[in-house]
Length: 434
Ligand SMILES: *Cc1c(COP(=O)(O)O)cnc(C)c1O
Image 1 (cartoon, protein in one colour):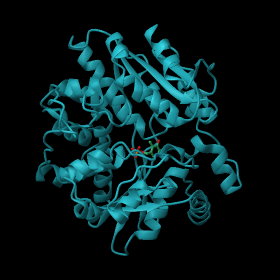
Image 2: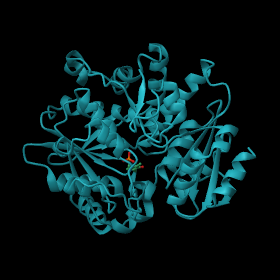
Image 3: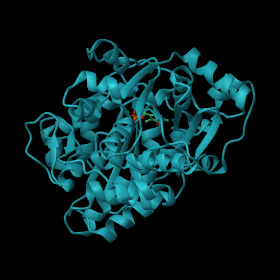
């Protein structure tokens, strides 16, 4: 399978090129040339298959031409060592819990899958030198990528994070690992970290010096595997006889997660419609209202993994729908919530149902509460464990709760990071000496 760029100028790339480059040479995003629908037989038996079996079938549709069956199966099975159950919250609203991975966030699957895929290419003898993964993070991406890539041969990860602006637990998740993970503590905000990464990809001298790729959701190996979740959610809803009028609600920032779900729909997954739930960063919501896409500087919120003013996967959604605004509006509804609405939803849901939401999932829950019709059943993605935002959530519900031991274990290590200014020349100088 070949991959084309959404900007249409760069030549077609192989899977390996698309994954090791991250972004296409014309700054567009890679898209698979074909989206292969899954068979009726698969959908007929999907509710009898395991998460891994379902994911393997989905992975074959994307990567089956480029990676031999057994190797692909190993990559998928090694990635999915945990479950993502659908849990009833109330009435016709269900939570798809995507936080049972190693760092308790949904990005674990994409990060791990990408790491395994790069590892596979290296094993084949195709990638001889070291591949350097750059990742800018406001918290969750850095921890998922660092843990997913930890100890993978031939890959070095640089996590760029804003000094003093990630939670203590998140910081521990990528600064205490050592080995092939280096944390760069940038004296600036998240946008500065992202700008450093973007400038690095554009700097010819630096790219001659080392092979650089991105592990943000622009990378096809990171965003496509997220489609697994939606097939498995559908299977679980079918198992309980509730899959007929299904609505999927996705708390969105860079729109990689929802974009993978839309690929699922193209593969025949019977989800009736989608809701993109945003915090106060509402560019996509406004696009749906007006047809105009106007990127904004990001606004800081309590759902900080969604603080994105110019979602990178917007270009993929436009490409998937060939720019047809009405078709996009038919499939996707938008919602936007302020911090006080998010807090009120966490409090109310906990009081009414006993279910504890994190600030991101809360946007999804609220969007279903506000928009689900009586004849519909909806699930929202609970994208992170509430304990990752412990102090915020405790203040909202007025009660303390315990942190899972897996998360607490990260707090035991010693923090190691390299302090850098937000200046590109300082960052480049550091990288040129590596
Ligand atoms: C990354 C993230 C999101 C947003 O996902 P996108 O794919 O960027 O839209 C939502 N919630 C949490 C907890 C995240 O880490």
